[in-house]
Amino acid sequence: MAFEVPKTAYSGRIKEIKLGSGDKAVIVGGETCYPLYLFEGEMPHPPRIAMEVWDMPPQEWAPAALEPFEGVTDDPVAWAKKCIDDYGAEMLCLQLVSTDPNGLDRGADEAAEVVKKVADAVTVPLIVWGTANLDKDTEVLRKVAELCQGKNLIIGPLEEGDHKKIGAAAIGYHQTVVASTPIDINLAKQLNILLGNLGVPDEMIIVDPTVSCIGYGIEYCYSVMERMRMAGLTQQDEKLQFPLICNISKEAWKTKEVHIPTEAEPKLGDAKKRGILLEAMSAMVLILAGGDVIVMRHPEAIKLVQEMIAELTAK
Image 1 (spheres, helix red, strand yellow):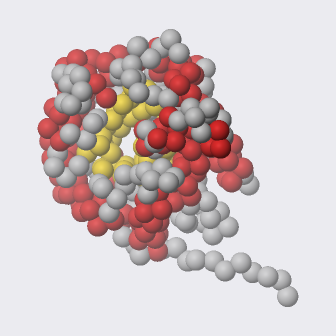
Image 2 (cartoon, one colour):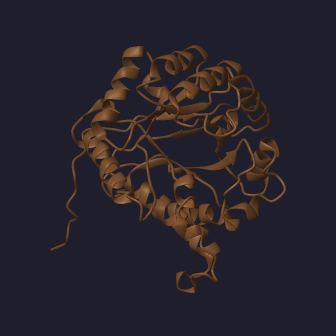
Image 3 (cartoon, one colour):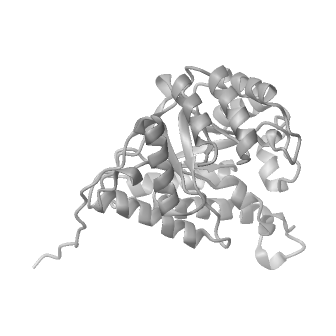
């Protein structure tokens, strides 16, 4: 008697959304099964990786993270082009670190001009990520949405406290929004409902559940993402049937372990490999939990994850 693998019956489907515009636009979502459970359903679009770019030179990056971008970290446009030309980036995430009120506090007009220059210089989908300061993000992201009309950017994080103003700008200038909530399935659902009530179409929403890396709470992130997928696929909860985006790069590379030199803690192994593996393993855990877009930093970590995705999705 042949063994039959037990299968879960799915009644829901993750919504498909188009990110970017033109020939390099990508589609994410569309799953009819749990992440990578290809024996039970379909995963028409593999997880995508967005390569990180900052709008200012990083001050506290580990040497291993800085090395691949030597010579371009003071120019976001050159940095973005290097990611595409040298490392084959299929998506980019421009982190607006300079707008942080506790840092340089760059103004909205200046920040938006930087975004516009990068958006004009590249053809791949561009994510624009603020600082999670409600007042500043409202000011900056609304200006970005206006100045980059027609680019179909992915702008965020959009939270309950600023969703009305940023959401309205996204609708008016046709930009996709990142609906961000602090690791809570009920809050995520509530924000999606609020965006729907505001008039943001489902195809313009991607959800950020908020993530952390291995050793810093990733098991809780995994649990919340897993429950979102379960609700969307098996409980027909339409407000939890959105693709997920995970901004893991900053979380992985800010940990103390990646900053400890090899000679200071030889038992931890080579510092460069340590950081790369921490980012790659964290990203893979999030993909297994349901991540559709993963923001990453180091080219070698990205290569490891892409190889794993290719192997797991091969038919």
